[in-house]
Amino acid sequence: MRPQQTAVLASVTTEVIKVDWEQARFNVGLQLEQTGTNTVAVELTLDDPDNEAGATWTAVPSGLSAAGVLELTLPCRGVRLNMSAYTNGSARLTVVQSGGGQ
Image (cartoon, rainbow, N blue to C red; front, side, top):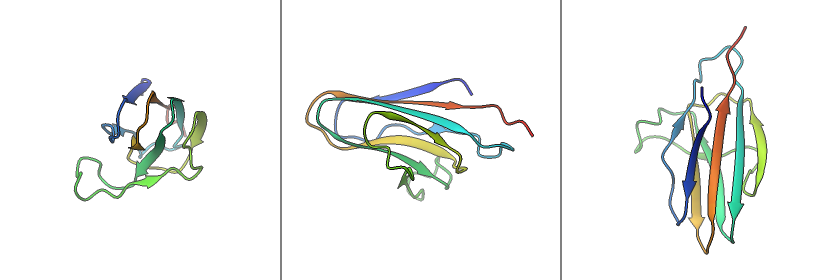
């Protein structure tokens, strides 16, 4: 998977970045960059992310809610950025998934 990015400038939830949950070794790198004073969370789902009404979203286990990086080894089907409170600035999430070797 090529690196993908999503960004927000307001109190919204971004589009979903789908990941290949069927890889033999699931490994996704997440990088969050944030400016300003906002409440932001990186979320994942184990459900089909195309079923927006039925997908359950959960904050990533580490609580990545400020600038930083995280290795995600829990298989999931999609990730997104949720800015629940916006004051100023922006937030950007970069997602990179490694190849799925045996």
